[in-house]
Length: 309
Image (tube, rainbow, N blue to C red; front, side, top):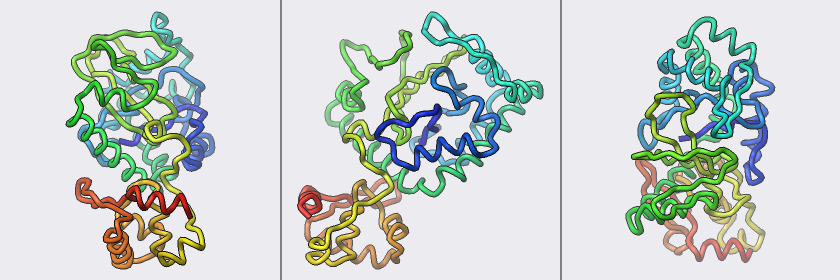
């Protein structure tokens, strides 16, 4: 799931396109989203970020979830925006004028307008980068599955982000908000746009949806790892491997499929497959299956070669 980058400021490790995505909210005609999301802090109605219905929901499925949000839920979440939850450190704020105008037509109208604006936002800011972003998320989900299977849930939680800690049966997330809940389950969602770890806890009353734990994928591998932009190979590396293989190896900052590499380098998939095969036989890349795609990644030897270029 690609959680949307609400708020004004990207994290320090954010890719440049993430910062540009936030700029879209200021420039494009997205009155509902901009009034609800362009704020320094505070509650953003949860229906705008629906819980994933399965591990890899499509954009259309998530937009339909927003569009079909029960009207009463939409209005109750907007009321929570106004009232806040002072005991938890969540202050209320005045509902913006544009949101009030939409609310006058009912909760269903707000949900439809939100879905329409989200689609436009997606097309402007995210669609060109989604395949590469999805690859990074798939790799993280695969990593989590391996940790969970081999070491258990406690080790998994401790591996997500330095602001997330599991100890004595309690999961703690560093936050300026104060809230403690006993919950039977939690939805764990990696994100390539979230600037920090956070728990999305429904601010409305009488709701039983489980909290959603959102954490930045970059938090596991160190900052300043760009999902989109490849490294440039040196002339020495190009002479050693050939320019095409050197470029492909350098591009594997994150796992990628043959189709993604082909699009990025303006090559045919057959050409990319041929050169990846040579790199694989040389022990410089490995390959694993993620759903229907085969993802290539640099091996330790391949990474050493790119570092020593």
